[in-house]
Image (cartoon, rainbow, N blue to C red):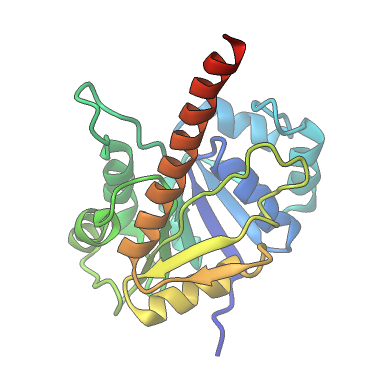
Amino acid sequence: MSKQFSKIAVVGLGYVGLPLSLQFARSGVSVLGIDLDSNKVDSINKGVSYLKHFSSESIAEQVNTGRFEATSESSRISEVEAILICVPTPLNEYREPDLSFVLDTAETLAPYLPNGVLVTLESTTYPGTTEDELRIVLEEGSGKKAGVDFHLAYSPEREDPGREDASVKTIPKVVGGYTQKCCDHAADLYSLGIDVIHRVSSCRVAEATKLLENIFRSVNIALVNELKVVYEA
């Protein structure tokens, strides 16, 4: 039987978390947006956009339906059936991935994890982060076991640059779980708001697909830039 989701939390209301929140709200799911930035929280609750790609009307519409609200209170994740972590993973001074936002978020949320909740990481990272880093922090902070007391998955945020008709709804989603049941739960969740779901065998495979996609895009951008110099000459 498919898992039912009536209310979810999206942690991190930036260029990944905000559009994802709006898409789920448009699909009929109640969304609790969580962000430490009180200015973002206030803007959303007033129906005002702080990202140029999203109109204030698109936010106000979902806020006015009662399906989208924002808060800075992490303890409110006790109200939800799924938690989507969409916080930044920048490079540090040594050009290595900085997981501090992900792990600090996990540490903050862990004490309030409800039994049976799904936790999905969307932040760009390297293979092994979800299982070897995020899982440990969540388990230690909650006293619960991944794959037993709560579900754990990785599903990278995706964009389709250059396509004007692309949206969160139409870009296929890759999903990998800590266990098969975790993957099934994550697929059930994302299918509520996204047209095409691709299940893969593990969190590591899903993490690898994101790196492959980013690297493929970067290499092609670099190639075109080099060709531009040649053609101009």
